[in-house]
Length: 286
Ligand SMILES: O=C(O)c1cccc(C(=O)CC[C@H]2O[C@@H](n3cnc4c(=O)[nH]cnc43)[C@H](O)[C@@H]2O)c1
Image (cartoon, rainbow, N blue to C red; front, side, top):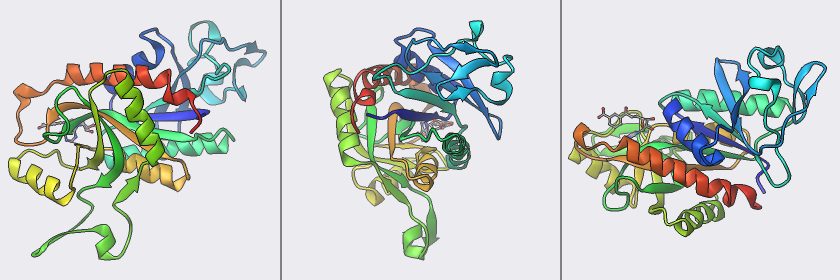
């Protein structure tokens, strides 16, 4: 069982969809902790109430520190959810858009948890994404088997060279196979349309058919592109924590076509995916 899960989104709307999935649309999340760098962690877990101690609200592992313990940021009534038996802690972090923002925020959360002796044992990068045809239609969900930095390398007259071929770094993080498989299985059991494949991280959203074809050729089976997964994965790897990426498809990877974005549909799919995961994978042995 994953005891402590960190879910990283780029923007607040994605975090809201995830939270509504985790809580069955109940307002179950509570502000947990302000992190260095100005990030905020919210916790979405069981309904077991938090006892209020003499120093204010207590976390599962003692008094909350900093601003939260001052009460100003405690939830109404000074109570935040505690994990009950078989209920993992699930914290949600809004990190910002792009791999650098994602890595910075994820590192802050992982450092905070590690220094507090409550390290996370799973990190999940999630949000909306562009889907590669034919694998990932609008409104479907993509489960990454690999998280790939698709533009971390060098352009040469003979083509693109990934950073490994330049002699340093890495451009891919594998997702543990059993984990990706189990996530996909849970989505399938819930009849959520989905596929498993590489999810590309890009710094520039693809906007032409030529670029989409180039990426698809370079990364056979690529299912989606987004902008944060590799940053989250780099931070997770630095702390030795397994990582997954789950994306709901809001648009097709290809020529820019704003009229065809389906952000609402993707947010609904994201919410449903996390509803399915919160009652299955997140409660099971990893
Ligand atoms: O202006 C555009 O053409 C455009 C097209 C798609 C997405 C955007 C964004 O600014 C959203 C970036 C945000 O959402 C994720 N995302 C969603 N779709 C894609 C995509 O096709 N390629 C890359 N990222 C996408 C991304 O993870 C960011 O968090 C603008």
